[in-house]
Amino acid sequence: MAVLKSAPTHVQGAAPRRAVTLRVLAVCWLAILFEGYDVGVMGAVLPAMADDRQWNLSALQLGALSSYALVGMLLGALVVGTLSERLGRRRMLLACVGLFSLSMAGAAWAPTPCLFALFRGVGGLGLGGVIPVAAALTIEYSPVERRSFNYGLMYSGYSFGILTAAFLSMQLLQQLGWRGVIAAGALPLLLLWPMAKALPESLEYLVSKGRLAEAQALAARLGGVGLPRLQPTQDCGRGAWRELLGEVFARRHLRATICFWSALFCGLLLIYGLNTWLPSIMHKSGYDIGSSLLFLIVFSLASAIGGLFIGRLADRLGVRGTVSFFYLLGAASIAALMSPHSLWVNYALVALAGLGSISASLILTGHLASYYPATVRAAATGWGLSFSRLGAVSGPLLGGFVAGAGWSPSANFVTFALVGVLAALAVLLLPKQQAA
Image (cartoon, rainbow, N blue to C red; front, side):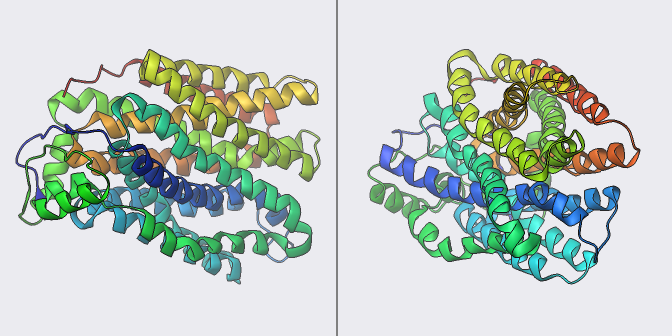
């Protein structure tokens, strides 16, 4: 197993060509879109599942069903990010897409809630592994001055995936039921081959493994991309896991690690809590199911577009101030939903909530991926996201608890707004990135 000999510095001799960057971005965008669909589909079909007389699930049980995939995602981010530094980032990205797509077919077929939960949990392993690997590839193949923007562009696929889930639910729920909408999540299997053809392996991975001839040949095929200057690693068994964690928790990184993990915990609690319960909360507030799904569409579309805007601001003004501001803006917007407003004002508030949850968190994740040395980039991102998955698991459960307690919809908004404030405070405490 690979063991780090030192904290290597990533310096590229030449920025990747635009065509290469676009290829990597396109494949990673598709992978994240498929993930967004698989995660967002639960919020889209939850009202229909609640009305399913065959299963007759309570609000808390529905929240638990939504969390099983997130438990798998916790383990997936933990393991896959680290394995990608051993087996290759390209291979692990494609394997993860294949795994969670197959699991969607199983979940659509599942005759009982227990089997449904099992398939969702297994699929979560792939879902959790996609983000750290896609983050590492996107950051690696992006010019330094466009990293936040490109990461925002790549991660907009997540919001478009949620948007697709909401749109297909509106079109297919009446004809095919919730099982048909979930089954559509298996369609990415048809695109695995073209994705594999288009995606290059990570040069950082090849160089860190001492496979310099392969790295030079790949760099030549990609049009003269500069090789990263990394110290090759050696195969030394289980100690590599300790070395990877040692780098993440080194004294020079400890404060940043705590702040990243805390902020992303809160950010993912917001994302998955709102993704799962926003349609149901708005339905309880008096909107029919179709209108409630429109709120999920607005939430997702605004965050997709907003990620590009926030990414551009972060490149120019700095990540810390930009992300903390939008977390606070999102918290204020969520709190404002407690009061009665016109439909269009509510749409605007939900859109700002999308900016202050999904968009802010995705830019922060991109900053995490670029913060640590190159040879632990995917692993550091995976471990950080793995911890933050505890927040993702807590989101649907927290929403289910509040809904099951019989409190008013305002209680959900207050709870999620407070979480947004905590995320902003953690980002403000982030230290400045050390110069390479």
